[in-house]
Figure 1 (spheres, rainbow, N blue to C red):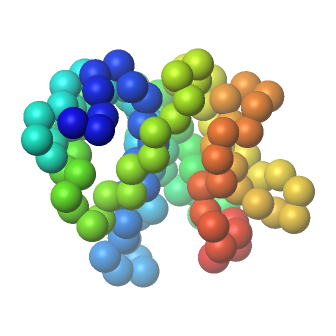
Figure 2 (spheres, rainbow, N blue to C red; figure 1 turned 135 degrees about the vertical axis):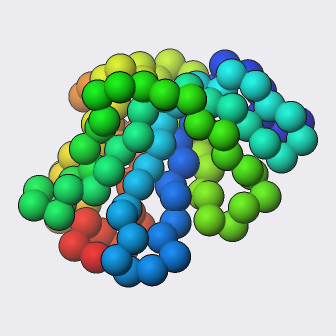
Length: 114
């Protein structure tokens, strides 16, 4: 299997319709079996007022299918501190996922205003 327990992942949950809530998940893999992963972490939900993804306070366990085209899964660096993850805007209004002061990845390849 490509993914292993204890790896850290970021999942973009694709919307089926424009009105659907924009959600992301970041967490640590607890178990991997075939195309299903169990991860514990936090949801990030888009706030249209700030145009950022806001981290939900409570962590929870989610199951994701790696075969589902609606899930875009990225592996985060091993040293990522999941408790410090946040979305923020940087130069040219780019939205990024940051762990403290370091930028880990662009959250939206088209920019924050889309």
